[in-house]
View 1 (spheres, rainbow, N blue to C red):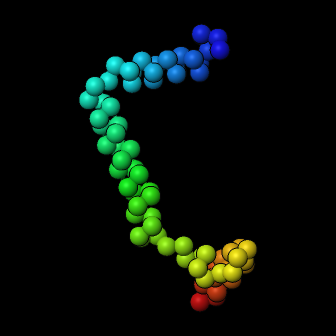
View 2 (cartoon, one colour; view 1 turned 60 degrees about the vertical axis):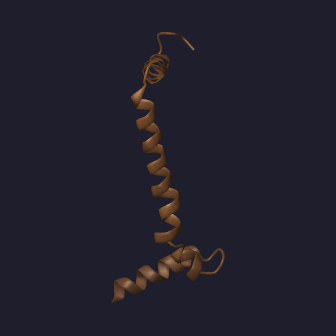
View 3 (spheres, rainbow, N blue to C red; view 1 turned 180 degrees about the vertical axis):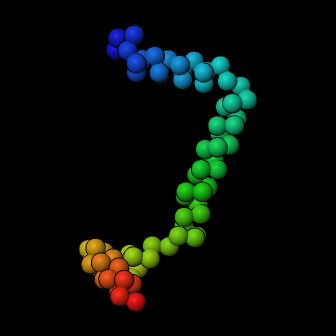
Amino acid sequence: MEKRSFWYRAFDLYYDGFRSMTLGKTLWAIILIKLFIMFAVLKVFFFPNYIGERSEKGGEPEFVATELIERAER
Protein backbone atom coordinates (compact mmCIF):
# COMPACT_ATOMS: atom_id res chain seq x y z
CA MET A 1 0.00 0.00 0.00
CA GLU A 2 1.28 3.46 -0.81
CA LYS A 3 2.28 5.29 2.37
CA ARG A 4 0.39 8.45 1.44
CA SER A 5 -2.93 6.76 0.77
CA PHE A 6 -5.95 7.50 2.93
CA TRP A 7 -6.27 3.92 4.17
CA TYR A 8 -2.65 3.73 5.26
CA ARG A 9 -2.84 7.04 7.12
CA ALA A 10 -6.13 6.07 8.81
CA PHE A 11 -4.73 2.70 9.89
CA ASP A 12 -1.52 4.34 11.11
CA LEU A 13 -3.50 6.88 13.14
CA TYR A 14 -5.55 4.23 14.94
CA TYR A 15 -2.61 1.86 15.36
CA ASP A 16 -0.45 4.51 17.01
CA GLY A 17 -3.34 5.68 19.17
CA PHE A 18 -4.21 2.23 20.50
CA ARG A 19 -0.57 1.27 21.00
CA SER A 20 0.11 4.19 23.33
CA MET A 21 -3.08 3.76 25.41
CA THR A 22 -2.93 2.63 29.02
CA LEU A 23 -6.28 3.37 30.63
CA GLY A 24 -8.00 3.33 27.24
CA LYS A 25 -7.32 -0.39 26.76
CA THR A 26 -9.15 -1.15 29.98
CA LEU A 27 -12.06 1.05 28.95
CA TRP A 28 -12.26 -0.63 25.53
CA ALA A 29 -12.27 -4.02 27.24
CA ILE A 30 -15.19 -2.90 29.43
CA ILE A 31 -17.06 -1.59 26.38
CA LEU A 32 -16.56 -4.86 24.48
CA ILE A 33 -17.70 -6.93 27.45
CA LYS A 34 -20.83 -4.79 27.81
CA LEU A 35 -21.60 -5.13 24.09
CA PHE A 36 -21.20 -8.90 24.31
CA ILE A 37 -23.59 -9.02 27.26
CA MET A 38 -26.14 -6.81 25.50
CA PHE A 39 -26.15 -8.62 22.16
CA ALA A 40 -25.39 -12.22 23.09
CA VAL A 41 -26.73 -12.83 26.57
CA LEU A 42 -29.76 -10.53 26.69
CA LYS A 43 -30.91 -11.60 23.23
CA VAL A 44 -31.28 -15.17 24.40
CA PHE A 45 -33.47 -14.23 27.37
CA PHE A 46 -35.49 -11.23 26.16
CA PHE A 47 -35.83 -11.63 22.39
CA PRO A 48 -37.17 -15.07 21.49
CA ASN A 49 -37.37 -16.31 17.91
CA TYR A 50 -41.06 -15.43 17.51
CA ILE A 51 -41.25 -15.96 13.74
CA GLY A 52 -39.24 -19.18 13.77
CA GLU A 53 -41.40 -20.71 16.48
CA ARG A 54 -44.73 -19.87 14.84
CA SER A 55 -43.98 -20.66 11.21
CA GLU A 56 -42.88 -23.77 9.41
CA LYS A 57 -39.39 -24.15 8.00
CA GLY A 58 -39.03 -21.96 4.90
CA GLY A 59 -42.42 -20.35 5.43
CA GLU A 60 -41.21 -17.27 7.27
CA PRO A 61 -41.98 -14.78 4.46
CA GLU A 62 -45.56 -16.03 4.15
CA PHE A 63 -46.03 -15.87 7.94
CA VAL A 64 -44.83 -12.26 8.05
CA ALA A 65 -47.01 -11.27 5.09
CA THR A 66 -50.08 -12.90 6.66
CA GLU A 67 -49.45 -11.19 10.01
CA LEU A 68 -49.02 -7.79 8.36
CA ILE A 69 -52.21 -8.17 6.34
CA GLU A 70 -54.21 -9.33 9.39
CA ARG A 71 -52.94 -6.46 11.52
CA ALA A 72 -53.71 -3.92 8.78
CA GLU A 73 -57.29 -5.19 8.57
CA ARG A 74 -57.91 -4.80 12.32
